[in-house]
Image 1 (cartoon, rainbow, N blue to C red):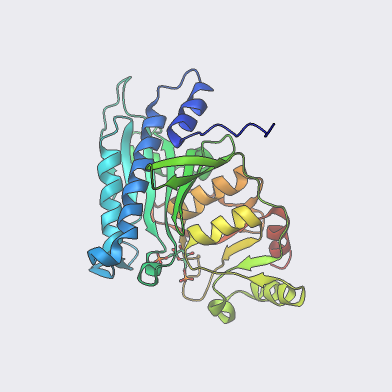
Image 2 (cartoon, rainbow, N blue to C red):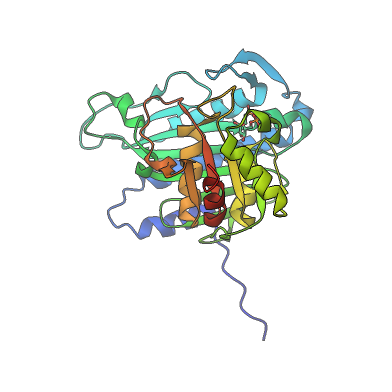
Length: 329
Ligand code: AFP
């Protein structure tokens, strides 16, 4: 007799299964995650049709980071804002693309909305013109009832995230999610329009001789990183770099290795954003048994945020590989 096939679990049923583990749960978080999964499907559809719809290229504006916005950055941002805006549980949303967070509901009574959602709507969007992988990254925080100013709720360290995830729009559309109980992976089946769970409790291999960073910056990196690269090349490492954090981290999550964005002369504090990129990715990596540091002994999830758009250095991935980098710093 052939072995029984595993049950089919959609992201909706997965979220309900997880919710059932917390009897005190109100369902608000589940509704927020469902808004994100709907947004992911809508963004995936736009990404797939981008050249046909003529929505590639610059929107003619710069975002708050001073970077050229692509038309699809603006479209993806709008999709997330509109889907999350309809969820009663969301107090506030903050996007990498917008200077200020948007306060949706600010009541402070017992039924007050309890969550803040931060996201990078289309990470790696400069890859769009060449049909490369891009992604959406999100982080969910509980609203901090102690703070008098609602905006302060966003400035909580990554350890306080209640959920984090990313969607990669690559050869297939993949969603990776953690609500603090491990990391699960879903693939969008376009023929039925549903995300299907394909892996549970992912674990990053502790070692893999692979590093991922923009090696064009090599001469502008601090000496320790240059020493590491020299050591890695003498020791048979491979180099892999897509230039979209979602795609580079996804490879490391599945195959192991280390992803880095060190300080450079141009970006002495690092280029990646703490709240929209580094914190959610670090939560996923740690939940999968890996490590995520801003520098030696400096856990990203413990970095106290002072500004929603602040930048950080990043070294994350397989435990042993991260240690091999910091040993050279
Ligand atoms: P874009 O969204 O502007 O393409 O930036 C992508 C990103 O924030 C991150 O996804 C990459 O890891 C990193 O920048 C790539 O930066 P470099 O082009 O400097 O290597």
